Each structure stands twice: as C-alpha cells, then as structure tokens.
Image (cartoon, rainbow, N blue to C red; front, side, top):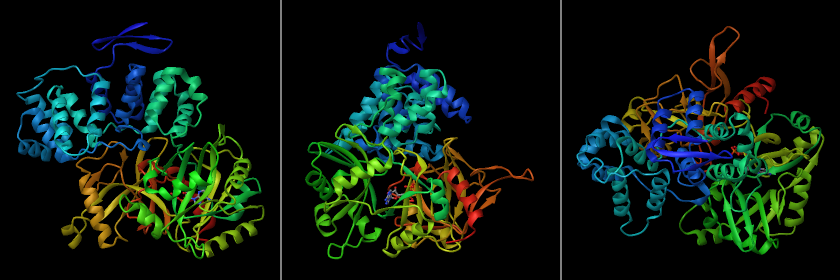
Length: 611
Ligand code: ATP
C-alpha cells in the first residue's frame, strides 16, 4: 500500500514502513498537536498516528526524542546544554541580541516558545533553508553532546545556532526544548509504549509484551527497533541482554508477619535487608559494568567491586544483583548508609575505596553462562547464588532463612533490626524475578515506630512555596509533592510539606528548584492546589508522616466517597526524612504510586498504629 505522508512517499511491506525518511517538520507538527491536548486517549491517538508513519531506520531516534532523552541512562551521554548557552545559540541563530532573547524569555517563561516567536520575526529566517529529517536533527544533537574539552562550548553554540537558523519557527521550538529537557509533550514511557502498540499492532493488546521487553533492557528505542525489524514475535520472545540493565524487581509492603506468610503460601525465604546502594552487575569475560537502581552506569565509582567481580567470579558471563555497602573490616559490622554514601563520588575514587571498601550482598541472579535465570523459581536462583558466592570475600550471599512460622519471622526481623539493619525482605519461594514490577513475590517489612506510617514514601516535587516572613525573603517555604499514577501516567498531588527542613536543605531545594521552575502547571501533573511556582517532575524526596487520610485537596486516588463527595488521599504531619535531601537513585516514575498509597491506607486501617 502506498500512502502520502506530508511531502514524502511512504509505503508498507508486511507492516514495515519504507520510503523517504520522516521530516523533522512532520514530527514537530505531531508534537504541537500533542501539546494542545490533555486527554490521554486523544494523546495516544495522535502518538499512535505519529509512530505509524515512522520507519525502521528512524524509530529509535524518534522514540528517544519523544522521551526527551538522547540515549538510555546506562549510555551515560548527556546534552550538557545549560539555558545560558541556549540563549546564545538562539541569539546567533535568529539574529537578535542576547538581551532581546532574555527579555522575551522572561515574558514567555519558556525558551522554546521564545525561539519560535523570534524565528517568526527573524530577518535571517530560513537563510540556509534546509528540510531536516528526524535522523538529521537527532544525529546533530548526538554530535553536540559528544563535543567536549577546549572550545566545545563555542562549537555547541555554533551547531545549535545553525540548526535554529535553517529551521521553521515550529521546528526551532522543539530544537531548543529537546536538549533542555523541556519538551512538555505530556507523555511518559508508559504512554509511549501504549502508542507503539496501537501504531504497529492496531490495538493496545501488545502493550504488556512491549512493557516486558522494556523492563528487560531499559531501552525504549531498542524495543521499538526490534518491533519494527522482527515483529511482535520478537517482542514476546525478548531476552535479557548483557550490558543492557534490567529494570529492578520491587517489593510490596505488608504490616505483619502473619499477612506476609499468608501471601507467600505459608512459607517464605526471609532475607536480611541491607541499607546501601542497589547494584546490578554485568560481566562477560573481562568486561564488567555496574548499574544503579536507575540504570545509570556507575562502574567508574566502584573499582573495588569491579576487581572483585573479576577475581571472585570465574564464570564467563553473569548478571546479578546485590546491595553494596561499607563495613567495618575489623568487626565485619555493616556501616550506616551515611558512611556508604561517601563512596558515591566523581573525584578521589581510589583513595575513598581504600578507606571505605564495599561488600556486595548478592540477592538475585538473572543470567548465568548463557542460561536465563530470571524465569527460574527463587529457590533455584538462590541455590546458584550460594554456590557462586558462599566462600567469597567481597561478594557474599544475603543472610537468609526459610521460615513458615509468624513467630520465627518476627524473631528474624527483631534480630536484623538489633544488628542495625533496616528490616527484612520476605520472598516467595516459587516466584520468578519480576523485572520492573512491584509484586508480592518480594515483601518488605521495616522498622516502624508507633504513630507513624509503616514505611516512608518517596514523593516527586511538582511545585514549591515561598512561605511567609523570613522564609519568603529566603525564597523557599515548602514543597508541593505528588505520587505517580501508573495507569494514567500522571503525577497526582498528595501533600504540601512545610516542616522538617534544615537550613542547608532549604538552600539546596531553593537552588535546584528555582532552576526548573515554570509559570504553568506541567502537563503530566494533576492538581487542584496551586503552588507559588510549578516545577517539572524531576526530584524525589523521602517523606515520613503520621498517617494517610482522605482529603478533598489532593488528586491522589481521587474518587467519590459514600456521600458522593470527591476526595483523594493526603498525608498527615508530613516531614522530610531520608539520607539525602533529594534521592539520587530515583527518578519521578520511581516515586511511590497511587496504588501503593491506597494499599498503605487500607493496611493502616487494618492494623492501626501497631509497630
Ligand atoms: P523501592 O526500591 O521498593 O522503590 P526504596 O528504594 O525506598 O523502595 P526500600 O523500601 O528500602 O527501598 O527497599 C527496597 C530496596 O532494598 C531494594 O531496592 C534493594 O536496594 C534493597 N535491599 C536490601 N536488601 C535486600 C534484599 N535482601 N533483597 C532485595 N532487596 C534488598
């Protein structure tokens, strides 16, 4: 079948689009449409149409662009473009003075719209008219990011200015917004996955398979490319790949030993829960890479772990997970997180690793010498871990006991807490590893205190307040925070947080948030309340509270109650806690979900404030 797509001719054979590549002007047209709608259904339709017009050679570029990233996080390539640099590029690319760019920016609150507006008036408009393809714009962005060293700033400005000079006003808007991480399309990964399913299979039914593939490689571009090259069959048969980190399996919460054992069929493997960094380690021959919970490549930070993997694991290839933490070499006792965190650094790595060597407490294995392990039951994976690591020095198995009595589980828990650990992880003996999903195959039980939630929650900041009196002068008075609603792919507010900040935390928050503040509500934020400033969902904070209550003020889990009054969930007496002001290991979509809050609310009702 042949179809006219904008100015090009495209046709499909066996569902694969061939023909001329997509022009960036066409993609920008779709982005403008996406920006103007708020209904997720309409958004999905537009995005589905957009992807159905994209061919194999450009699908990964189009997906990364739509995600607002250059490459998946484990590739470690960032744009490295600050607003100031972009202002210079816009000035150069439109022929206006920097001051004129800045003045308009102040008025519009967005550099993309600033560039669009200046381009439509610019006297050097389309001087070197060029019809960019999606791939051309993407590869230019890649080359900008790869520029480093002396003179790189000027080179980046020149390349961006050239792009802006020869683009249309609408294209310029997205050329500016993309590297600044401010596309504002209102689409998260979950929406993109659903749109891909619609575009290439005609229905939403393939979303679960696509999501599974994504969970196994953390690379949406790669998933899209596999889908277009080899069809949905290849997606259904997707396997983990060495050096593409899997998205982590996550734990549910239950408040009592009885409930935990009931959920796991009367018996569970109960492991000690360590408080360090989660690491996923990939090894093939001599090559070793270490990934964080957010799938960033952190290999450089941990030369001691890399060396231990090479010396302690004779196997040719392996993917396994564990918690890395510092311990007192003389006593063997684990050190608190505040000590371990000092190993997260970019400078003085070798000195610090000699001073604070890490152990890796291995808790799962996903791949071993060509065998996919993640689909095997826990018992088999655990056996492999014990066989591999029982007599090793740096990498060791977590302490585990198979338990079937609530009393024994409680004792194991108490003992772990007495030993200074966080609590326990109970694991279903027959369950597979569930990449990227929070399931009852892992259940966490942590220390809890009377009168507090059974667990802290991780919230994403969506706005901030200036506060009153001295705080207003200071420029920071509190946060508006949200949880993630996975089904709707939006962030729903749950709490305003005004207490628990130290002066240095307020300073840090003010500095970080003022850099990303916005005049209008970000598209994926669902809120009834208005903060003084909105911020795009980016930073996650850990919050403790006394309890979860129903509230008409917040959109988290909003529904009509028995009396027909719409209300959501909120936190009572929320306060900032945690080891870091902003969690370095969590992105916005890793924050606590609406579903978890509803579950915590229900279990809070069941057990009251039992410790
Ligand atoms: P989550 O990772 O569930 O979003 P979180 O980051 O707040 O939540 P916790 O609630 O403390 O972390 O618990 C989960 C984390 O516990 C895991 O991501 C892992 O890093 C750590 N962990 C420590 N010991 C174990 C263990 N024995 N088995 C699995 N995970 C463990």
